[in-house]
Length: 345
Image (cartoon, rainbow, N blue to C red; front, side, top):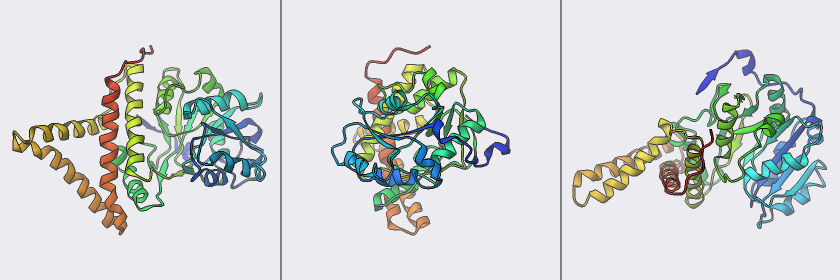
């Protein structure tokens, strides 16, 4: 659900937040390729940013991520490295809130290592929390690629075929929403809810938002604060990511007794229809129309994106979208076969 609010609230907030009331946290695990760009983008803008504690909660990286953070600490004295024995993003954010927040801390800003942030992002998010009184602030994600596959992936993920029309995927309207890409929290709300469920490796943000909504908290999607996100750079990495997304969504729905939304049911239908068609096709030739029809949609998407972007990299769009659909559906269905968590009432 997306509710449009008074246009007065839709403007980008002024930098009014007190930096000593903010804690920023970056969950990380093997992010050597992205972590320095992420940190530098977060520290670009007002000198007040150097007064905000910025904690990288690392889950045991083996690719040199920790060494990069240690090197940057001499340039950014407010940068801290925290060992996250729980490894997961959910555990990382919880740990930062538990161990790095001071008595003055009112706002927790979550940052992701794969993202490039606009100037003053941390101050903007905290200012939006203070200005709106929301329990959480979410922001739109604009996917950008560096390699050819990443570009094709980025060009399709923010479309209806890719993300199914999620408000935080390239959205242009500020509004209160049920869920969005987490950027900041009122720390009192975060503590009241017990933070993220640390057993969730994926979909921890959506699970948190379910509990927040039940408790009466609101999520403000601020379209004036936008981040650039670098998507996964290979089919294998994208497949694993979306398989885990599907598992996380299934766990979330089971935990809270909810049902799939229509846009979430579509990839499951496409996956199931294709599997049935391939299995039945040798015995009933018209059944092949199901997988062939789906493949034609993906091929058409590739051609359309390549023409629109005037780049052969766009031909990867259909492959990326198909990988998202199939692996998300497979993860969801696989999780459905596992022991279900106790429903939260």
